[in-house]
Length: 333
Image 1 (cartoon, one colour):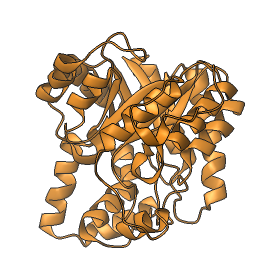
Image 2 (cartoon, one colour):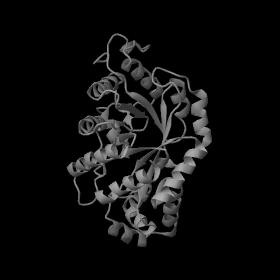
Image 3 (cartoon, helix red, strand yellow):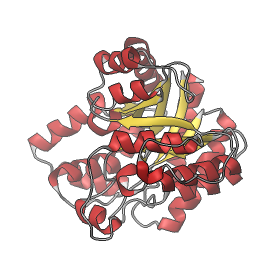
């Protein structure tokens, strides 16, 4: 099983955004040393809990601090950008770090609609024809002339650079068919909604057409994970992100508490909220020892047919977050 990292650059209680970026560099260098396949940076807008509003800049900075790790976005939220801008950004990144860049894109806004409108300079937010926008971007990255008349008379510079890998992100299965048709890789965000199924991945494989970007289908699955030497420690360290995710569903305050603060909140939860936390652990958030979590990932990889797991881990302590990646690497790599 290949292992990769998804980093949302969380800003935990008592920490700063600058500190979150420094911690990202430390995590990237560890992943590079441990043999992780790739590291992606998420795109989030409109809140203080994450320092990941410009993942392409983080990608460039981390590329200079690592040696072999593939790097990119998971994902660039393409509703906010023109195909020409996306193509030029990722061609520039590919020129800076040849053979190490991933162009990962998603259709979500990466924040609330107020942020989306602000990113559109107050204009109407356009959700339509996202796949057409992606296809145009892929053509521009390849120095081709797109069918879209707006982009036919311009080149995306720099030209003649080594191309990035291309990945389409999904959390519901809707993008699987389109990723296959375009001949690009597919990343499923299990940590977001759950819902992974054989049918989604079979749809992708059945519609896959070899392209300049990929000769055969490739899938990775992103999990939230908190791993420790004992189940009790893992339960304790998982508290802050569990409460954060619960508050997200309830429209509450989205802070990453300390483990002690999360325990205090848990003691006051309703029975319904406790059921939600239990359900979250079944499918989206893997919490336990390296063997327990590693076995679940391996078994699901065999069952659903994927060979790369992308891990997002958010704990209050950087040491505990790094521990999750160290323990999973020892178990699975």
